[in-house]
Length: 343
Image (cartoon, rainbow, N blue to C red; front, top):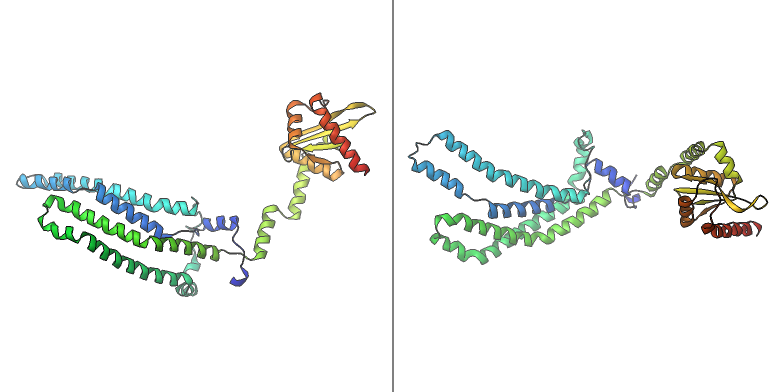
């Protein structure tokens, strides 16, 4: 099937199937940007080396007589306190955007071995694909953005950099952290437009790769709605839900009032016997669908009236007379059906 014949947008089922294979819309640059922003902000705002310096100072003041194992354990504990939160922040910053873009769909089939990925022909096609051209242009734009960010940062903070020679040693880490944060914020501001454009292009390429031809869309709708054979089998199952007595009551009914899939009420009317309508059938859910299907088969009129069907179902029982509150509306419905039949 040529790519030119695939003109239809992918259906929801096709996108769900692709998500199971790990093929979801994702923007790696957005995830990386969130990761850098959160990671650097956490490093600058929360990580401090004062505790490490205090530990090292105590070891020196003891004349290096402190047990090395105690010193190493202290270093390891401090490293864990520093590294563990950073890892957690980075996992959240990279995981949440990916889950949001994929609609929280897990790729259940992505772990299967795909030998087609080792095909050199597929690799050659990817080498000259539109996405490769996009990545090359994007890399060049990122490089230009970084040069611009460094230039702007230098113009803004160069006085602070030159004044570091007079700064106390204890405050150098905070100053350099602030400078690094300034550089990253300026750079992120420069690349924001690039990241947004990359998201739009990635979405366009994702939809383009999963486009379908018209025949595939028709086949999928046919599978979802069911083939004529499946529909016929479903009607047979509906008929099997009904006993012979219910089928007889349906055939003798003047009308079946439906809601339209959850309730079915059959109305029997014979003025020579009784001038008040009589409830011959009352079923719900699957049996209601079966009643409606059988009534259509044998030629009994089916009228969809949600409000009337619900009221009768709540206030009546099977084989009971219609109460005065609903009798006028039911008689009006029967009269209208008689006029339609005689027209």
